[in-house]
Length: 73
View (cartoon, rainbow, N blue to C red):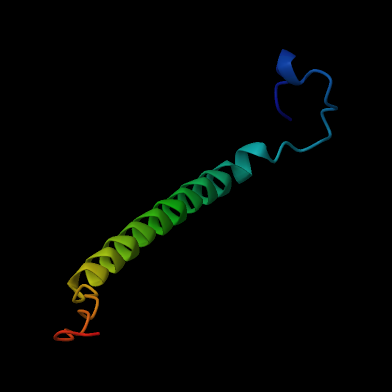
């Protein structure tokens, strides 16, 4: 069947090694998960930047000046 390597000498020869078959799937999952995390970081940064710009565009709150009472008691 297949030549047995010394590294897998403890595994019986009848067991099928599926690691090589699933390696592209696992690599794809890692790449997609990494892209999702990067996407979330970028989306959070854009949202925070947009929110800060929106806060600064509002007119600053100015307190109402005290009324002037001429010659109060």
